[in-house]
Length: 162
Image (cartoon, rainbow, N blue to C red; front, top):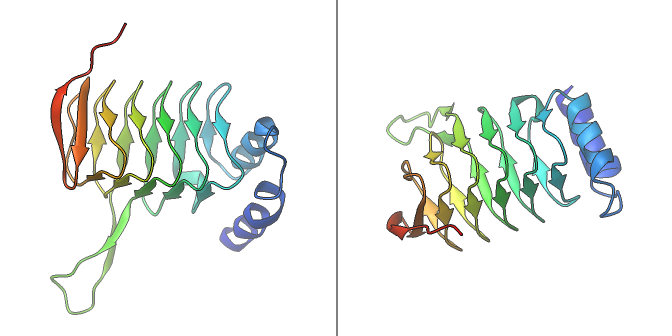
């Protein structure tokens, strides 16, 4: 199943015209992803294991986004994951000589914007309505409705919505 998905992703998914969002949603659902209504996923996005991914309604996954889904990735509704961002559920235990691999769930709550080229580490939860600034690295939970920036990311001020 894994190699079949990688074949499909490298051809039918990646080579599909930009506007065929429904086609890409169909392919992901075929491989077990839970995808909400009107989700927009760009053809250059990469999903390691779609059966470990859930995306809520009206969310966007930008160009060259990597969903490294060794563990579960849960993305809420009305979320934007901007281009070149990397959600990484897997890592290696550097305390062990064998560098054992492990996976931890990532949760992105509703109404979050993850700006361009953001890294999200295993086990992170990003609270509802948060904004993660461009090129930030998120290694810990980010609070809801806050603008968070930096490497490591930290909250700097509340997000004021109109």
